[in-house]
Image (cartoon, rainbow, N blue to C red; front, side, top):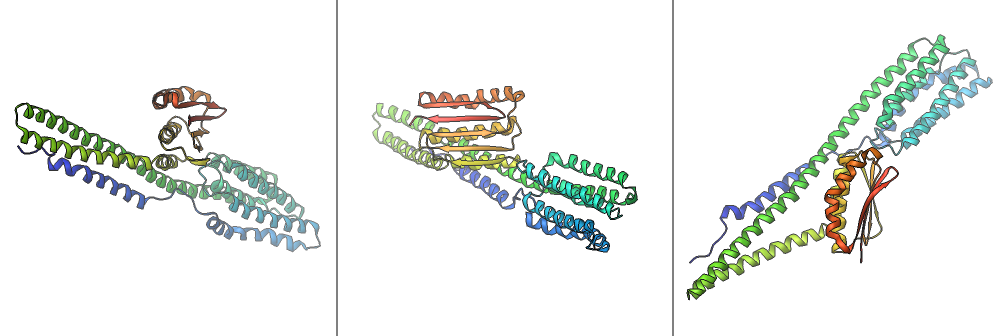
Length: 400
């Protein structure tokens, strides 16, 4: 009796399906846009071209004569204002997604505002109505260098200041106010376009992350199906071989046992391949997947590597904790960054998006996958989670 084999279509479907998914992932990776705004030097080159607008104030100062102390003061203000303006483009990111540079942006903006107000006063001492137009520079930096949540408020503040100064210095007319307003509108439109381009890059990354997750899920499903077929065939052949032996049909029974050996070796090789791939993927592949997921959501991942989790329980559990903690951070809050600290005995994952109203969501999420990880860990270590101020920390420690 001939041995039983898988249908050719089933044998061929597994590698072909994996090849199709992988090529889709590679295609997304090649076409992906990095979610970054223009470089600081490129932005500076563009912004510096508008410094010629300060020439009007320089002409006012030189026309008054350098022996006039207010003229000298105005020239000093022009120089310092230009220096701060240039510095602001060098120390602040253009169209930033994170709020880590908020302090730097606020500091440079305040310095520019102080110098601008001083310039309006100095112009008045020289019987000139200039200086209000300097707010155009503040409108541009407010639109292009501020964190997104501060963009509209900061532009509104600049336009309001321009309106107040126009009322204080009526001789200036409404042209400077109109210029400041138009600058704010145009640069805000430019900022929105930058944000859309960055969002497209993030969407590409998100699709890539989902594709990788589908790859992994499909690979697990394929392995399950293949092993189930193998085990079913082994049981069937073994049962038939036993019946043939009872009927004193040794040669036919031997054929079935040889088929059992062949199927067992194939299943053994498949398991070794998958286990080997899993071992090499823990926990670094989970860090890569987490970085893609977080980046697609506009969240920065900081990695502190104090050591590598010991192969075995520590590495496997660390990978699972990284996956679940990062997924929960994105799903149940809006953090600006997640910090992963790897140690030889485990891992710690902290995000800065926690607040007390979110506690029920975190508790429900932790009671799911993380609770199962803790249960599987058992007496071999500890897995804890909870708030620390506005941070939520998940910590795994495996007994060595």
